[in-house]
Length: 338
Image (cartoon, helix red, strand yellow):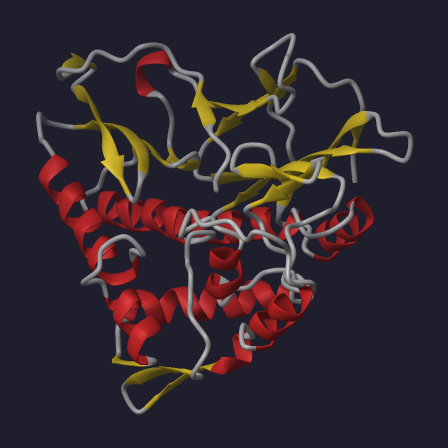
């Protein structure tokens, strides 16, 4: 599940309007079981909606868990498919983030996530620890092999790219815009955002609001960030969950335990040039404690983050790296910087 990001820009006219020879365009709809919102400026009245739809269809046919004809469904069922460039890329990016985060990210957790009912919607009558251990033993990244033009999985391994695919979709649309010499755009898919240039009509960077996870907030936003030529992704434990015996069961599974994440991190927002990496790293932070996150960010200073968590006294606090300089602090009072 991905945390909803609210785009704090003024209402944009849905039809093309010219301003200093640039036309403003807006395209929104549904894809990958979520919503997308794309805004861009072009030097002439060009419509990229068909091209964007084509990109969505290619991704859907490759990695969707809801399209029964997708290559990912075939791979999970047959454990072997011919080379698929999107699956190959997402596996390699997942392996990279897995190593960066000390194995706190995995794309091989589908059986465990499904056991808890987040795909099948059939929640277990009771939590069988031995069953979870068994599923987890077959959900290792090392069970994935790519060689001789084929992608292979071990017998009981299945993949799930939902923690990285929406960010990757933003990256693909951005690559297309770059090829078409579109330099001012904002692409949002399921709350993951990639930007370039500026919101041309306002002569300002793109303004992105990070939602306040408080169920009864005094403000809708914890932070407003101004972005240009950067991506942002947020993950949180408070949207897609259910309660079992007074325990919150989040859809974010800890790869080290096989159980829903139990850290005190409530939401994590990551800034990175590539939206796919921001997406995956934000998810991995949900399986770390705040000290591990701070150590990670010191190791990778080019990655910026905003993390909302409960401190030792169970107070809601916010940790920000010093690179998140363009923000307006709204609700949560504690600010820390690297």
